[in-house]
Length: 305
Image 1 (tube, one colour):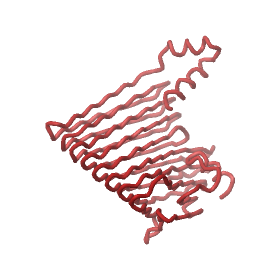
Image 2 (cartoon, rainbow, N blue to C red):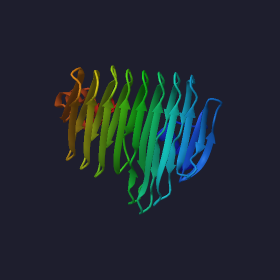
Image 3 (cartoon, rainbow, N blue to C red):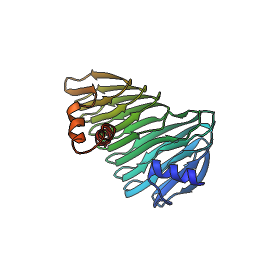
């Protein structure tokens, strides 16, 4: 990997060197390194368009890194990655994609991830998207995520996109059996003429299943965002979605809540708030010596943490 690819890898996966544990690093459509462990096996799909990650039952305190970097203008790819997480395991999965585009052609990565989470398994999934480069070609990321959670399983998802991505269309589908719990924390910022669509469809199919989907976002300049979340309660369950957004300049934000209760004991809640930065917050920070621009950045950074 060259210097640019290594820097992008650090941005999306926090890697300064080869990670411990299992990993698969993809650069410009090719494998740049892979390692399996005794409990985590990574294999290529026969069609050559992705990988399978199999985590043995009972695997504890281990990690998998599967970052992707693109530094070639005009490269477009679709990759399918399937995760089979054995029951009673407890693992961290770090993904993400970074694009460096200094050319005139669009670069695009569409990553389709499917998670099959076994009974009583616990998963923390971190996905970060990042773009850079001074070319006129766009940086496009369209992630698709499917989550199938068996009884008593737990999954926490951190979905982060802070800057540099011109267009993104994120779709997340989840189906939860009895006692399963899903937590989603989305952090998103758009600027310039960027656009971002986030779609969540969560089915709570078993008694005691629960989901908490929270999005925090900032739309700056002429950018556009849409948050579209639907919770379906098919059993006694608890579901909550929240969209909390800051709008600046000429930005536009659309929040679309959908709740569908098909059981008398389904408890479903949606909250949404869109507004500008409060003037008193700016004044307070400016009295401490910050300029208005510096005060805005401090508020935004704190909001997106």
